Image (cartoon, rainbow, N blue to C red; front, side):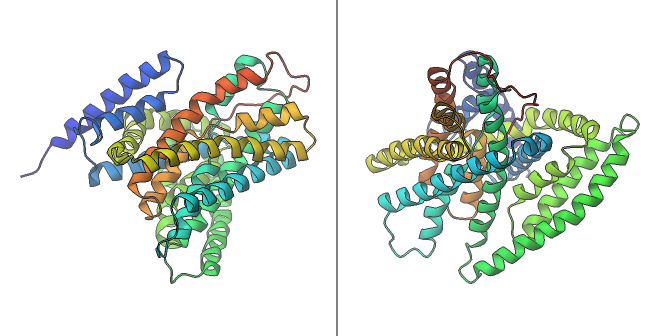
Length: 401
């Protein structure tokens, strides 16, 4: 007999994530923190009301695809062109320093015991630390009158490039999980995928540009866009061995500068994600988090990982800004603005778990990093940056990653 318990599970997840999300918002925290806490409370660590099932896994996968598709849609390519080389250097340093430090930290706490995937597991902790989510930073800088200035522009541009670099690193590391596969073959697949992206992107951009001119007559354009996202996600994973979120992100990127289509698709996708799929994804991360497995050494590792997560972004991105001629104060501010990991780190961690590169006992430290870095970033910015408009204000559109 078919069980309909999944209906009750969905209702519990939606109500609890919304309730705790609103409470988080009331105390000036992002709603994602409340959704994570809801998952932890509902999961085996506290109440044990909800357990991970195949249905939840597949539903949360759709949730993460929607999130990455919207991240691509929200990317401002014109802003990326404005910030140019400075943002690239900041993002590059902001990826390399956390990647190296996170890998090294894993080796310090978990010495190699003959696991053939040990190096990749260590490397993946570094990959998680490369992530950046600047939505909280954007709101803080806007309140301080700094969003349209030199520092705000650099942070937004670097965050976009940081995401692209992070996805490429994620793809490479995930593709190396099979010991029989050579890295040259992985890189060849990535090159082939990007060639395909170029061709598909050109064709779809032309097609959606034509549709967008009469989008009010073709409101199905949101369905076309989401279908394109799902197909590209499937092609990336099935035919190229590249994470499906990579396909989703670049599907959004292909459509991001078709203004009418982008705004309409984004509006519809926001409703779809907000209503069901995104809450289930964030709750599923909390459900995966086994707090009962937190031993003394793992608590120490969590604290060390948090410290490394904060310091490496400040040093890496700050160094990149300094190399590009920013003052010491502005360089430090850029580094602070890139500290928050947010939902991006959770997405990367989930892909690592699916690839067998992140064990379940490492989810609590990662969730801790996400929550704490998200909370302290606006506090640090307000402590170390002065309010007021930046002298070098530049008109720009905010980007939500």
